[in-house]
Image: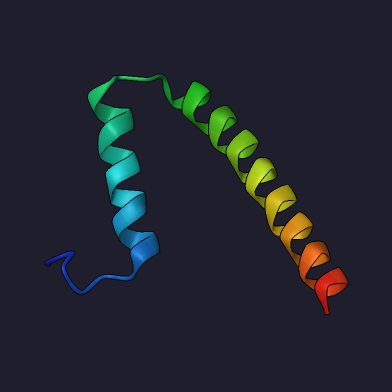
Amino acid sequence: MSLENAADEIKLAVDLIMLLEQHAIPTDTVLKALKIVEQDFLRKKEQNAKEEDTAT
């Protein structure tokens, strides 16, 4: 299966998996870090939505 036509989130996920595996980062560390990253991006998404609401 080629990633050429895959959705951007699939391509990014594959890149992240490869990067994390290449550095042999422990699974528990990766999962904890991903939760932090998710929280950060959810906050950014919320902030962007608020900024868009106040701009209109």
